[in-house]
Image 1 (tube, rainbow, N blue to C red):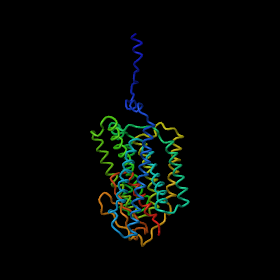
Image 2: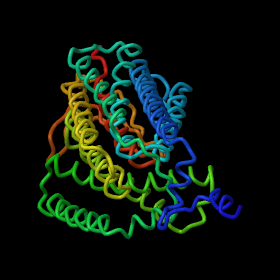
Image 3: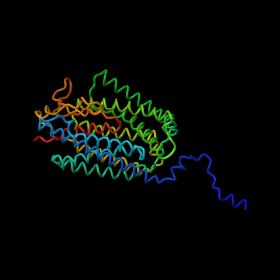
Image 4: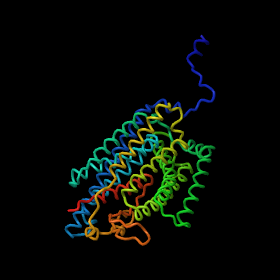
Length: 382
């Protein structure tokens, strides 16, 4: 009887991680799909909000009527932007960062479709082909990306921070960042690749911190409280600081170069840095088959090419129309300015309407800044 009773107890193997036991009790595929859906919905809402705000600016500039912030429709766009950013933030708590970052191409596709339907902009052949490539790349990414769902706890984040591979990665990133900053500031080399690399290096830290903060908030809602640990607030500070400097350099790039150059380069660099950060810090590719890795890279390449085709050679705004846009840089926290960039001393001339954007959220803010410029640069010449 004693032997039969002992057979009912299944011993836990030595060294077994209890976090895996908790993870197995849930459906990882369901959590993974929730992250994808939330990310896509957030990107679509952001695209809708951008086009609403753009429509208000175009309408106000044509009528010469009251300022933009007196429009109820403009504030509806701001509210939608907030919900979209919140969805993008929450998505990092459910799905791998290496998947959420490439899904940013959904914003470009949705924005192109919305602008054609509601703003009566011209649909080009490159838009259709690029959108098809981006959609194909997104499907491949979703199918072959890591499908595991990791519980982000304070202890996990602490262990990842002190791991040797992350410390080595951080050291290399700091050295490269200092070299690029020296070349950019001291040597006065204003090349787009240098500026966008600075943005990408900061974005990798933002991705790591955003996923940590979002994951610990999600874990606190579903299980043990994680917000009482100091590491949560450390990652929160890192998220805000890296976001602020990331947007600073990105805005400088928007002033010096055309949006058609900044949008695809920023998307490629940001996505690559986010994927590398997820692989190094969270070990998201651990145990992933070579076929999945190869198809994941292919999906990224298709998305990159699609965004490049959509952003390439967007129609420019007429010079006389630029001056009618009202500057929006006077509103704190909502500085999504449309400013005339006729001539910048010592910089490349551009006839685009370039926005200055400041949001309270990091990694996705950089993409939204570029998307604002992309959509603002495609205003009708009428």
